[in-house]
Image 1 (cartoon, protein in one colour):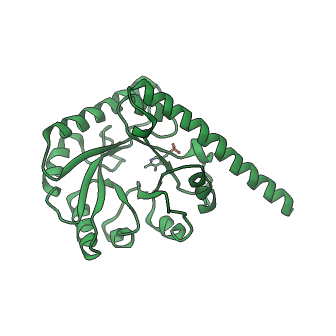
Image 2 (spheres, rainbow, N blue to C red; image 1 turned 180 degrees about the vertical axis):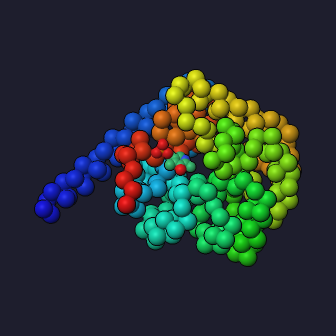
Length: 244
Ligand SMILES: *Cc1c(COP(=O)(O)O)cnc(C)c1O
């Protein structure tokens, strides 16, 4: 029994290693196809439901960014991640009353979509004498079920939050609708890229557009072709998620 367990465990680590290398190759390829280099693209692993040990294995392979979805899950794994060379970020929806628990622990919060949330992140960061990097999440498909600011309200929100102390606006994040065709999802990525470039060109005070975070397991290649410089990959790296 013991041996069986460790065999399957070893297999799991080997799978992650194989997947990691495959994704790396795809990122290199997509980066070059879009006139950029591997170093211009941040490869983040979406780590929900994945054990810290497996995550650390990916980090040992060179992974530089990990993103968790839930505050509670992040806190339960926090002491086990090996973060010496890796940035821990929050990519899932965040409730205002939980901000206090993660400020100072994460390098960036990618899911900011309201003045209230940005204000609370600023307040808690100031209490800790730090500045927290944030991305604004855009609901590019205008889906009722999804969080994120509507595209036409993005600029107004940026104007409202850019003067808040304790936060630094670093870019945009999006989770487009599920699409059957690559051409369809690419249209959403292109819309995000246009928003990103338009805002960058406006050179608003206290607003940096360094990161355009979009693309997941099924579409990170298309996302990079359409301007993403950070992709968030879960199941293609770690295998299908098993919810417990
Ligand atoms: C789960 C998740 C991902 C990755 O999804 P996969 O399809 O498994 O690659 C990316 N971003 C967010 C916000 C997620 O919750």
